[in-house]
Image: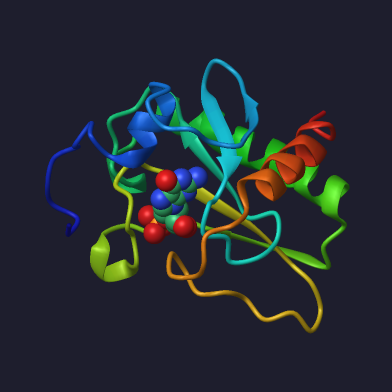
Length: 145
Ligand code: 5GP
C-alpha cells in the first residue's frame, strides 16, 4: 500500500485494539496502546499505537491524536530503558509499503539496542515466544512512570 489509499479496519492492530487478537500489553491510557512486537528486531521491541485513529501513517494523523501519541512513545521508551537497560534505543516509524511499512495503522517502534548485538530484520524475523513477550511486557510495564 502506497501513501495513497484508505484505512482498512481489518488490519492486525485494529483487531488487537478491539480485543479480537491477543497481544502482550505494556501500557495503555485513553489515547495510546503499547504492546510487544511478535517479530522483534531486538529483545524488548515495543510498539505504540493510537487507540482512536483511522490514520494509516504519520502524514494522515490528526495533530490532536499525534500529540498524546508521541508523549506515549516517550513514556514507554523511558520505561523500556529503565526495565532493560539498553545502550541505545531506535525509535522508528514507516510510511507506505515502499518505505517498509507492513501494518497500516499508524505506529511507532521502540527498539532497544545493545553494543555488539546486531539489529534483527524488520518484520521478517522469527516469532517470539509468547511467554517471553508477556514477561518482557510485565518488566516494562512495571517501569511506566
Ligand atoms: P511496520 O512494518 O508496519 O512498520 O511494522 C509492523 C510491525 O508489526 C512489525 O514490526 C511486525 O513484526 C509487527 N507485527 C506484525 N503482526 C503482528 C501481530 O500479530 N502482533 C504483534 N504484536 N506485532 C505484529
